[in-house]
Length: 540
Image (tube, rainbow, N blue to C red; front, side, top):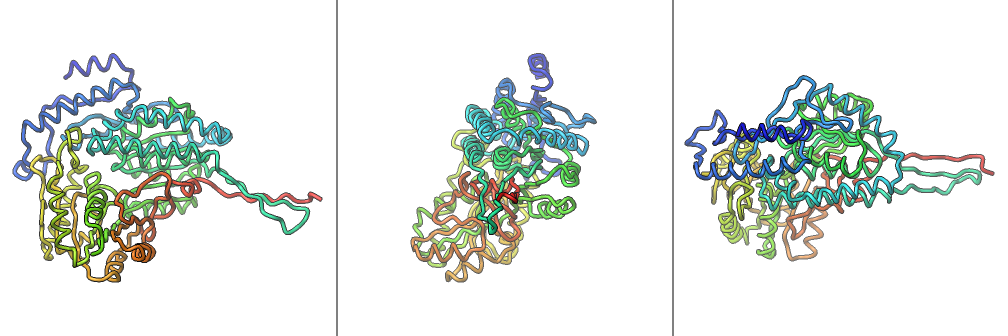
């Protein structure tokens, strides 16, 4: 393998190299995990290691992968030379070292974005649209490679990862189209010698902080509309999944988006965040992640009075009424609960089932979940990959432990998978109560907690009994009930008889402590625009 690294180094310049670490035949388990707790079948581990190695080598030879940050159109290391490891969650292997950047690199990225803003905002909307459209075309042309990269560093099944590429690219396509539709207004003047105009102008430099669960889509959902409106961006992807962000940034350069318009820094999250918050050159912060971090960013933005868009944590209820079509409800619940191994902010966190259908639904759900294939995301027919890291597994374990101690019963799963590492068995638990931690906190794992309710009013009360308000779901064949409950639920998004609700053409965002602002659709464009009123006088 040292031979491979030597040949690889001579074929590609520093700016086009991933520093692959594929020498160890077996992954390193976390120090605090015992072999008994996480058994690892050697044949399986060796098999998926070989798959990962082959994928990594193939991606490396594609030419658009990078393991450096992007500042002002130049690929750069951390100024102090420090790096962080990017691991494959399915194997634990290190697949790349990327720069551990901090305050200084971020300040330079901000300056580059600020300088580029003056020229980027002056391009015609049609020009920006063409470049964004080219970026979309390149993303779709490389959807297989990008999907493989997402699976390699994030762990989700390959089919799901390729689906994310299409979904994420859709935001760039939509933004390219909407760039030409940022309209102003003319207001009838109360005085005859005046004309009143409303202009919409780009807010300026945007700091975009994105999570690991959708390494591409959470970036394009922010960067697409920002660039379409004439803004420039400094992206801080998660340190767990930076490679997809870097690949997307490379494709933006190939699409003709000028140097400095898109910048990518990663590493020391607190230093990068502080630099973005304290700089007066950054006029907007957009963030997807936990509510706790979102609150800190919101408070930190007050010092320079920045615009903020925050898509924060959820606690999504999924309400199944007695009159629901069982097949439709089952399909929708499986989709919203177990997509990405339960690691999405709109995953059903609590499944509220009316008492008349509770037992029947629980049996049907358990049967369906039992048939889910768990494994390495590159495996055939795999629908559940690993959780992102050991901390994620421990959180799931602690929530299930709390629920069991308070009377909940495990119908299926409820423990680490025999595959080891961070694989966890898809789980169904019954007799869950609203006061249990699993009903109060985001699980972010493949666990379906079932709660029983009697009346529509009780279901609405249970669903709204949370500080979160991002997404909710309900299943019923009663049209009147679907309207009543949809309007009563205190959530920014409601899916009725549908478990997959995200699309670039609709506004995505929450209420209460699930955030402020919207992403996607024409409403998402407004988040990157300022309104200017112009009064022309003495025209008589």
